[in-house]
Image 1 (cartoon, rainbow, N blue to C red):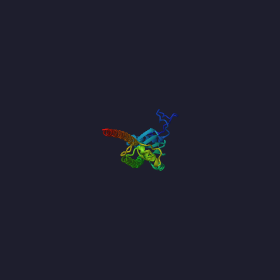
Image 2: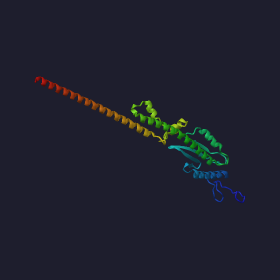
Image 3: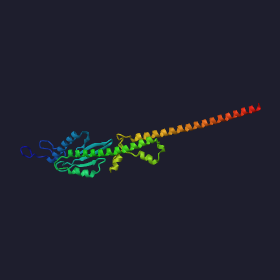
Image 4: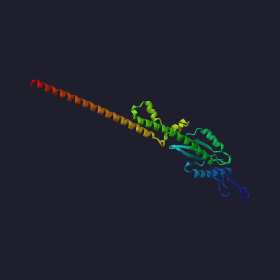
Length: 262
């Protein structure tokens, strides 16, 4: 219908009589309005979140948030053709360290109101969950790092080389904790997709710990070599003294025989 109230007839190929087309997939004014609102909402999300938001396709959005080094939370949103007028988007949450993703997923869907956009509300909820998980992972990682640092300091104080430690003590020393290590921590929280990061601020990394162990082992081996060398030198000195004593006795006996002959 045009502005005068008269209907405009469409041809079979979906074109106006004047030659203009409505576009591929057009089914009516509601769907056109939904598509326009989706595009506007995507532009707003891109402006608000910057690199944290990206469009995988015309109907798929991806929100990302870094929790720690090498650990990223993700929320993928799939838009139906009748969003936001009639249907809620589908979403997939992937947040390492989040205790109950199923409950969080349902709470996101419950926020949808027919005819209302939810991109901004879901984006804020997603970032809140990510910040909470990041704080939890960091607290656990820092505690593990402090424990490992204490074990390392104890090892340094005792001057105990790796070769002198029992297998159980070596396993205890190498037990991971980190960023590096955050994946192990998240597995203990019930999430099995986390992997180790590289290093937690305030503590040695695994590579530094292994390097220190190698240094101590080399120092212990050098000490043993020095002790063996000292032992050999002591034996040589003892033999020299014994020969000197024997030579002195021979000289004394020779002097004694000469005195008797006179």
